[in-house]
Image (tube, rainbow, N blue to C red):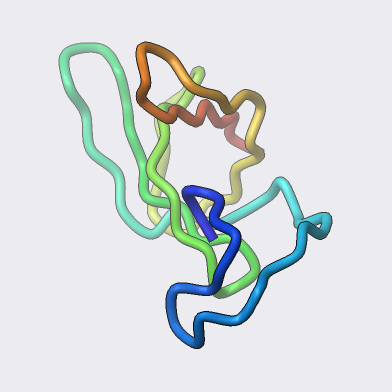
Amino acid sequence: MWPPSEFCNQCFKEVSWRKRSHEGIIIEFSKQNEDYFCLVEIENTIKIIGKVSSGIPNTGQHVKIEKCGINDENYYFEMSLI
């Protein structure tokens, strides 16, 4: 669940932290100037949008999350192609 929350946004039960994979599959991608951004699905459930650190992405390609955090009160993800 992103952003993190104390309660599930579907059933409203308490949630707990657990380790998840850092790898996913590109569902869609786009280019702005020289930067590529992609929508990635992780473990068939979690979908995030992030910047591709290098290379040219393709739909169906595998990526790994390299960086994530908060910058100027906005969440960000940076991924590398596998």
